[in-house]
Image (cartoon, helix red, strand yellow):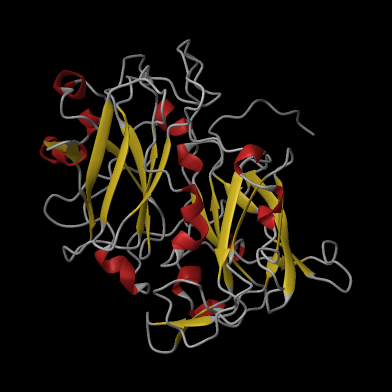
Length: 236
Length: 187
């Protein structure tokens, strides 16, 4: 058995605390005892592997899941999955889900007074290519109210779930849109203390992936945890 | 090159829209060797209420102690169709149940063997970053006693990682806060 090459601990400020009082629901759902810090073992540096056989090629197009077109602004969301060392994470599963263009989820507990769209379910998935690239076609999700605090509204967002290559690289995050005025009020966004890391959650408008007369492009790169040691690289 | 990692965010209350397609409550399909076990319990919040919008994910070795992953280079057999992944949503009362096979022992970094265990990730609304824990087995007292990870856990809290035999299933509850709070790991 080769020696274990572990994953570096996350840089301070890039990950939220379990107890974050501005997000009220964390109060009864965060651990109160100190976490135990064990060494990383084979059990954690491995993780489930999913591939092209697990998804259909059309699973990345959320606008083609029903008979008609969903209502809303069609967008292309694409980017790369990388690690903290800047290396692409190839052939890894990316799952997304989101509200429709009115800010409503087709879910029994979502009682927001906004219309459902019979042509939009809001879920997709894909597997990154050899360079870590992924691409989704969807519609821009709407903002919606929630009851965390007075006059609370979630900024428009798309949920992302990624596996990477290990149990330790598992990541669920949210993508936001550039210039959204709700971001500074949103505890999900503000829970990331490091400003640069926080801004990594905001996609950028991408003229180059925009399709003329069809859809605006947004680029969203996701950076997963990186390896402790990496093979020697040539100095420039 | 050094990039800042993307920050974790909660799965929110509508997680099942995106994640239910991969629900896997029977981790070991037909033809997979090993001792069959069922594990059931509840995910319980700080008020003692069941968490009805939670999700647990399992990662485990096969009965030989081999992971279906290229970095497990042990010369041990791996059955076709074995992945070792489970994704189990909680129900309206916070309950969950899954079946699998008891994994074999896998090496620890010091070269000795770990006790049979499952690694567990827990997701829910109200949690900004998944929690990690482990499930050990009650009939492995000797292996548990020498397990290098369990040894790091304060003795009085080790029982939170070991289910109890109850009827045909092993009962294992995830207690987020308070007395009997489950041990969670930070790697």
